[in-house]
Amino acid sequence: MALDIKICGLKTDKALAAALAGGASHVGFIFFAKSPRYVEPAEAGRLREAARGKAKAVAVTVDAGDAFLDEIVEKMQPDMLQLHGAETPDRVADLTARYGLPVIKALPVSEAADLGRVKAFIGIADRFLFDAKPPKGSELPGGNGLAFDWRILAGLDAGVDYMLSGGLNAGNIGDALRLVNPPGIDVSSGVESAPGVKEPALIEQFFRAVGAARDNRAA
Image (cartoon, rainbow, N blue to C red; front, side):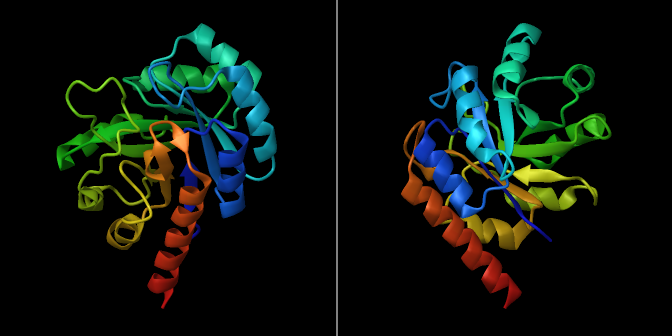
């Protein structure tokens, strides 16, 4: 099974180039002003041109209003939307109809009961992203560098398409792939030298670790 790999929170040409060189299937751009990974829609549009035909460009938003989403879609021309806030199934359905784009719905996870929220989005969201619940007081719904107990995902119904996120890095991605064998993975803070600062060398290291883990599994 092919493994989708999303490098999220990209802001620079060098980081994007490293993601594409490593074989990223998805590249993500953050449109949440409180995030250190925030990028303006026009700049994301410029960056995403390098990904055309190579990786899917994902616009990541958090409870964004229609006007801001209109600007993002117009200026960036994303391949997908990722909704990382408290969006309801009705909101997801409305945005899918409005833009005609596939939607990834992010859901925070800390215990098995949290997966109960998936059911309401089945047939509405195109894919899920499971991230660790943010720490108390955090203003960021994701990108906090925290992992959850990945074994929880064993309780998912077969056929649920998702990406695993939250605290992934070169040091633990092998364990994540061995324990849950997710259809996709998403990394952001795990390839940064400081909050919001993607490090090409760490991106390359992450892809090497993924490759090594997959080789070990095949062997």
